[in-house]
Image (spheres, rainbow, N blue to C red):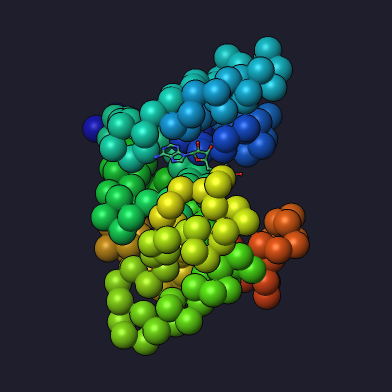
Length: 209
Ligand SMILES: C[S@@+](CC[C@H](N)C(=O)[O-])C[C@H]1O[C@@H](n2cnc3c(N)ncnc32)[C@H](O)[C@@H]1O
C-alpha cells in the first residue's frame, strides 16, 4: 500500500477550471494535480501560477472519473467543484468509488454542486419535488435543460443533474465515506437570475475512514 505524502505536501486532485482553489492550495504548500476535461482551462491555470509554485503543479487533462486514474491511497484530498452536476447517477457513483480508492486513509473529498433551488430551474422545481415524494433515486436529473433554462441553454449541456443533500449523503456513504459536513449554501457570486433563496449550491465534506 503506497504511503500518503507527509502533511504540508498533500496531493490534491482539483477540478477548478481556472485554478482559484488550485492556486490557493499551491500557496499553502500542497502539491496539486489539476484535472479538467478541457486542457485549455488547465493551461490558463498553468499560466497564472508563479514559477515558484509551478514545480508542485501537475496538469492532468482527462475525463473524470473514467478517463483518469491514480494509485490507490496516493491522494490526500480531492476537490470536485461544480462538475458532478453534469453527470448521470451511475457516473456520480463511480466518481465516489474511484475517489475513495485514490485517497489515503483519513483523506477527504470536498464536493460542490448546483441544487434544484436555483433561479433558472424554477420551472423544474415541481418535477423535482414530485420525484422526491415518490422516492426517486435521482430526483434532480433535468433531461431537457433548454426547456427549463432557455437563456443559458447554449452554454450548458442538454442534461443537468441538480443535486441535493440526501442524494450526496447516500452516494458518498454507500461508497464508504464518513460524512463530516453536508449543507446547502447561498451563492451571492452567481448572476442575479441564477440566485433564488440561499440554497443554490450544496457542499459535502467527507473522510475516508
Ligand atoms: C462549471 S465549470 C466549474 C469550474 C470550477 N470548478 C468552478 O467551480 O468554478 C465545470 C468545469 O468542469 C469541466 N468538466 C466537465 N466535465 C468534466 C469531466 N467529465 N471531467 C473533467 N472535467 C470536466 C469543464 O471543462 C469545466 O472547466
